[in-house]
Structure formats: C-alpha cells, structure tokens
Image 1 (cartoon, rainbow, N blue to C red):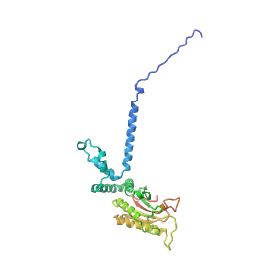
Image 2 (image 1 turned 60 degrees about the horizontal axis):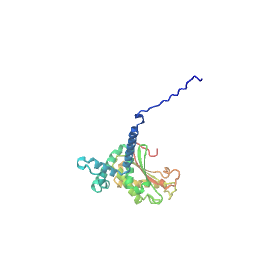
Image 3 (image 1 turned 60 degrees about the vertical axis):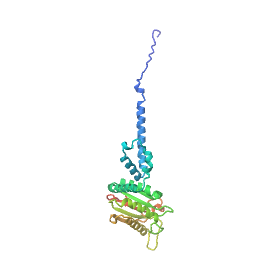
Length: 261
C-alpha cells in the first residue's frame, strides 16, 4: 500500500460559445409576441360591429401608399368609425345583403350575423334574446323578463318592445330564402278562461308574431309552420314558472332541422 501512488485527474469540460448563446431565446420571444398580437387583433375584430368592420376594410382597400404615405390612420379613425349618412347606410345595406345571400347555406354565418345585429341594435334588451344553432338550423328566442314582458298579460297583444325586436329580426332574415317556423311558449302557470288555455294563448302569440313579420316584409310563403306549445317545452326546466319560459321562437330552417332535437 505504501508503494501505490494516488493519481487525481481533473477534467475541465469546455462548452462552445454557441451552446450558451441566447439567440434562440430572442427568436422565441419574438414569435410569442407576434402570436399574442395576432390573437389580440382577432379578438378586437370580433368585438366591433360589422358595419364598422366594413368601413375599416373599405378604408384600407382604397389606401394608396403614394398618395397617403406618412399620414397616420389614427387621424382619420374618428371619421372611419363614426361615419354617418348615405355612405354608412350603403355599407350597412350591402353588408346585410351579403349576410343574407351567404347565410342560406351556413347556419354559423346566420348565427354570427344575428348576434352582431342584436348587439348593435338591440343592446338594451339583448338579455331577452337568445340565438343558437340546433340540428343545422338557427333559432331566435325572444323571452319575457320580470317587469318587461313581450306580450300584455294574458293576451296576444305584443308590447312596443316586442314589435321593435321582431322588426329588427325581420330585417335580418327577410332576404334569406330559408323556410321559417314560429313557435309560442308559455310558463306553467295555469291560465283558464272558460275553454281558453295556455295552448290557445301560446298559439295566438305565435300567430301575432307571424303577422308582425309579414308586415315587416317577410314573404308569408316562406313560413312553414306556426305552432303553440303551451308550457310543454320550457326553456328553464328547473323552474317552470320562470318568466323566460314565456317566449316566441323564430326558427330559420336549414334542411329539415328539428327545433326540439
């Protein structure tokens, strides 16, 4: 043991400069920043009304770098976003026609157009309007709210609010070729006036909605069905007396959609 020598080896590991470089981190940070900006742009685009989006698109479509180079878009943003008069009406009309034409084969486009329209023109009552897609069709439900009914109590006389809502919806769907179905629903509160029941009330309210749509320009030949369901198809199943169960459903049919599937 005394003759043995102890040898200690020290190994120094040298890394190349490239393995410790931070260039990939810079590239990755740029990529993440660009993606964040892209998704932020998409979110902002979906938040503005279709008419304003069309005006912005129109501005950049006619933009010339030779005539407007060095000019800031922000200086003109007020006029672009708040444009009024004949030109704004023309853009809005053209946009509605475009939606109406393309929506015949696309429930998704119809749903998006209706939601934008409700946000833009019926924002004060948007909590009483529900738009959804079911089995390939699009359903617009106009619901009662406590203190703000769509029909006079116990009657088929629509309130001014109901007339306004149905007027806006009529403008949105009257140019589309799709068949239309109209349904009336009540809550579960028994309503008996002689032989007159919730079945009669829901049916008469659906017929009143049909008349308002026809007066607004909807072709009566497109109306496929008008029906009353009384309280048998509640919207709020856990509370049959919830005022939202009292509603009118206007259904834009795609193919042979069944509203109760």
